[in-house]
Length: 417
Image (cartoon, rainbow, N blue to C red; front, top):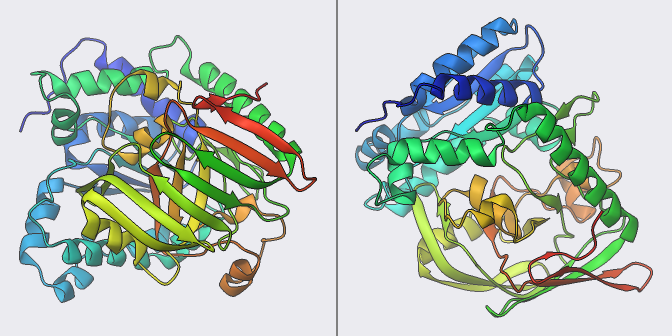
């Protein structure tokens, strides 16, 4: 497997990308502990990133390297008991860094096809161990009490899936990542400030509407009503931590998002892009909801994986997020299906099964799990986004004042700044 980097200016782009992730994404401070999760294959970039960290006085760095093929091998051979005790899957070190207010940068680039011969129940079990072995981190991440972010790196398996006809697929994917993340601009930080400003203005517009219900329809057959609680807030690209620090949790990002009332989703929704989950692909699926709960579903491919998501825990069968993304976003306009949620969700309006975001609902600070649920927010160990946006998606809002407002037409915002 080859992952060597070709091109005289690649190190310069790596440097600009690293600066973006640290300074704008995590907004990291001198001396702050840091966890970096990354594919082994991305070591050239990690070396540049590490140097940038040290230049900023970030010296307590835990490198959580992983490899798709190593994971694949272990899942084929290890028992569930062995998986539970393996630090490859058990991520309790995250809680150690959460205790000391560390920052967390997760770099993704998984091969979408590599787990096709693994027992899906074992893969689901390993994912559950990964989620539940770091409860403090997950709790603090949900409320943005720790600085965290997700970004991508080009790897051979992923690049080969996206650009199957290219002999230089790894570099081709890197070039596309750089383009979409605005690294090719003269000043990426300045360009991201413009993006964050537009996102903030769109949030203000939506928050001013006081939306009660969203009605989604398109030619795929989607006919879905999603209810929002009073006091629901829309959030965008930049998120403010309780201490006032601004972070950008997803790079790239195009979404405006909120959390629906967990009991007020009704109707049917059809996927518009493949969903890659733990190395499996789920395609051409639909989900039906009644009173917030999934009551039926099907998929042309990966139905058992979809079922494992829906039944991940007692509350993963309810929605935790609805996000608005223009169909004419830069990622969508690239014409590429990325087979990774980080990119594909930012090419398309999407929903998420599982946990919601406490910061999208007034009055949630300091509330217990049961109190959050009673307020209408879903709480789960699972959070899985799936894409529903199309070129003909229409979203009509009904406000708490009884007004009907068309907010999306032909796949794009029709109220805007």
